[in-house]
Image 1 (cartoon, rainbow, N blue to C red):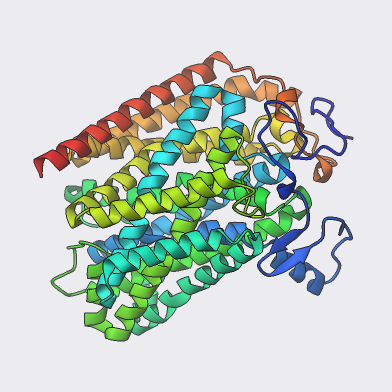
Image 2: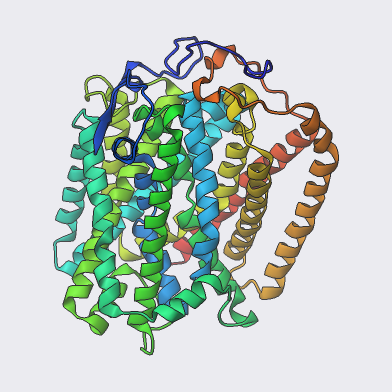
Length: 554
């Protein structure tokens, strides 16, 4: 029996039509037609034997792998390359700390998609009101549009190193990105995407051509250190924050939830999708570690150590140390990462806008069946490509910096909404978070808020010292302890009186959105949401003003 507090809707599915519900049409229900296999809708037989389970995994694999590999995009190449060129392998430990963060965040998104059948933006709109729904879509649209520009900047850097015409390379990349989605076939798109994921493995031979010290990398992977001492704390912290921002990006939440829905993943395939996610995390961490390690080896003992400029200079440094082949492979890997990053970022935006505005949005549909969805997707790609072609090197550098800063500022907001949605019993029923997940995510939110505040302060005051940074961290730590104490004192009784019955959850799906009761927000939550709203508006405005001032000064 399900807990009686959960709305019981026998046979309810995400496609139930109701006024006010997200437009989820018949394209989101049916056989799973993945790049590596098919699962029929009526195939409900238990999976016995390794072979049957492996075939099921092959059919399901995709959402977790693509969202993670897409995260190692052009911006990631620059961020990890900067860490390696400027600090060697001493910041590798940040990747190890990000593994549980990546899993917990994306597992919550996976659950939301499979159980609700509704996209992330739509859930925010319906459960938190129009302001937050509009805010989430507007900031996602702005951030994704700028991120997409950085992907094309990556294309120009790779093309420049390879001796290819930059304009033609950008146009060709944009054409490939658009054409791959315009096939009207989810399977064909996913096959292209997974092929590009395999292309990311080009970093492996580059790594071995440069042969970093494995023992040193293993040591730095598990031993936290901040190189340079207190005098360089501000600069090091900016790199650490950039690593966090590029590895745990807001678009990932929107992309994976909608992609899980579009692939028709349901709760009965949750275990397989978690394996898919772990495969993606393994690939992204190995790729990031390889980038840091190979760039550290390329610039160690050279005049270029500590003088990062861009990804093209990384390729040149790699060539100088290991030969032309290594440089070419690195540039091709950068090109591949830029294209798959553009795939994911464009799709996350098109999915979110389709969710909020009731536009049919599915890769299973042809262009005629989802004109708005494909129009948003193609429009974003064309505009980003045009901005890249019309901008100069300085402007491109400024855009890249702005994207990293804005992602860092907005990330706590995205994680807060994710945590609240995963504790909404009307939405997830017996799939709501357990106490351990909540405790871990609360700590993550606290760390992200601290890093976001440090980042904002550093942007407004470029000369910020180590004392100010430590002061911000200490203040956030005290605030975190107070919040934790309040939650423990006043939330413990409610938890004991209202246990979660998770029996039968494999068959539980969220009822139509318009049938759910409006969530009641406590005074403390309203105050917290209000403070978050004020901080995001102020921080974003300050960042924009600083970027404009920098551009005008130049």
